[in-house]
Structures are given as structure tokens and as C-alpha cells.
Length: 370
Image 1 (cartoon, rainbow, N blue to C red):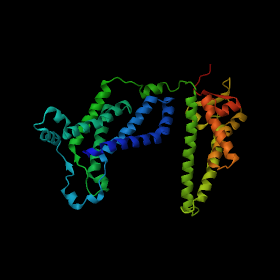
Image 2: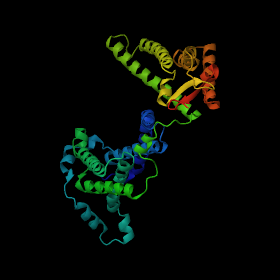
Image 3: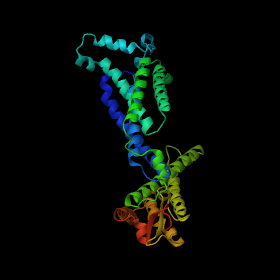
Image 4: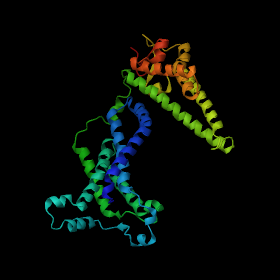
């Protein structure tokens, strides 16, 4: 898995960028999963999941990149290329040859030595994440480490499964040995050092306990409402695009029909979400995810049918009209002012604009009757 030394920094930056992008894309699903399983956001585990995504990106970056220029992989180059090294002791001999006669300091800093050490270090996080975050058994974690390494070597040996005419990196059994060693070291570190955050079982055991309703949780409910709406709109828009393109009703040259239909679908979805908020105890989809329910202020009574009917129209429908209805002039100013007021209301009070306007508050659905 040797790479070009000059690409180390580039790979590190690309790994951070890709990991950050994956974290953003997967943030909503992970938050929803944590709330359903643990009853709250487990902040430490959420941060470590983000670190795991960065690590996975780094694993790909340092083992697959930089990719070669296909024009340089000629038949003559491929014929001279050694694609596979089956000798597990070759790494020891390479180090012995490279460091023969060198002082201790230069030996430690030799490229061949550092390459072997890096291959060990690269898989240490896999062993630790497997035991601490994914909570796999020792043998399972070790098997995954070996399996990932074999997959990497196979990918390199086949030129990314035929994308390139031959292997542009050496598939090396030495890498299998060093990577497996790194996985074992990671497992050992997880076993030696004390756990600094609760296990999944400990978090699950406390999932039914009611938590304080604060502004952060209300914000999260609203963010999830927006995310659910955008996901539903994207799915509807994609489906409509396929149907209309297949029927010849919309083309790339004239997408105006499709855009009009998507805008109508957005407003219809806003009404659907409003109707969903009217059912049950009157909570929105985001509030149901975060175990929130609207109640009459100063009591634990559910809001009346009139209040449940009016609540989504206070915020959700005006904002949807502002974003997708393309108002102009005074209508746009009113919509912007309304949306600003809705945001500021959450900053000032957990009740939000709809709660302040309709005399509502929010409680945790898991609260037990006194």
C-alpha cells in the first residue's frame, strides 16, 4: 500500500473533506436512529461516528489514491509491473537492506521503516472503533480488519476491478500482516484503557426516561421537520421527473413544466404535513422523533382540535409558500418577516411562534402521570 510521499497532505485534506461531507449527509439519519434507540442524542458517540466516517475516508484515500493517468499504463508498463508479492517476510528483508549500517535515528526515520509503521498505525483505529463504537466481539473485529485488508489488496491487484488495465499498486502480503497487526493493537488499546462513555446497552436502558424540554430540543424538532419535508419533496420531484420525462412532458431544453409541477407538489406536501400534525396528539413528525408533544400551557392537557388545526398553519404553511410559492413584492416581505419571527421565537422561548400564538407549551411524551 505504498503511496507517493508528496500526496500525503493532499490525501489527509481530502479525507477530512470527504468525512465531513459524509457526516453532514448522514447526520439526520444518525440523529433519528439515536433518538429512537437511546431516547436522546448521545453527543460523544455522535462525534465518534463522525470521526469514524473521516477514518473510513482516510482508509480509502491512503490505499487507493492518487490514481494513475490511464495513458501511462501501457501494455509494456503492465508487462514489467510486479502485481503481487506473496512473501510475508519480504518487509523484514526490505527494512534490513534499507537500514544496513545506518545510525539508530536514521533507521527510525527511514522511508521503508516508516512505511511499515504507517501500515500498522493505519488499522489501529479500525480495531478501536470496532470494539468501542460498533461494540463488536474481539474475533468479529479481527475478522473485519483482515477482511478489509484483503478487500483493499484485491482492489489494488485487479486495478480496481478492471477500471485500469493492470495493478497500479502492489498487492502485498506484508500489508496483510502489518494491517492485521494494527487491528490487534487497536483491539488491545480498547481493552486496556477504561471506557469514557456509556455503552449502547446502558444508553438503551435509560431510553424511556423523560428529559427536560429545552430550546435545543425544539430546534432539533424543527430541523427534522424541515429535513423530512426536503427528503419527501426530493423523492416526489425525482419521481415526477422520471414520469414526465418518460411521457415526453418535460425535457432538458424546456424544464418549466416540471418545475411548475414540483412547486405544486411542494405546496401539497406542506398541506400533507399539516394534516399529519393534526392527527394523534398534534405533534409534528420532527417532534414525534424527539418525543415532544404539544400541551395547553400550564397543564398537561392535549390541545383542542381547533388549536391542532391552526398550529401548522402558523409556521409551516407560510414558510412553504414563501420558499416554493414564489411570492413577489409585499407577499415576499410578509413571508420573510414571518419566517424571521418564527426563528426568533425559538431563540426566545422553547414554545416557539405557534406555542406563543395559541397558548401552547411542550412536554416529553415519556412523562409518567403523577
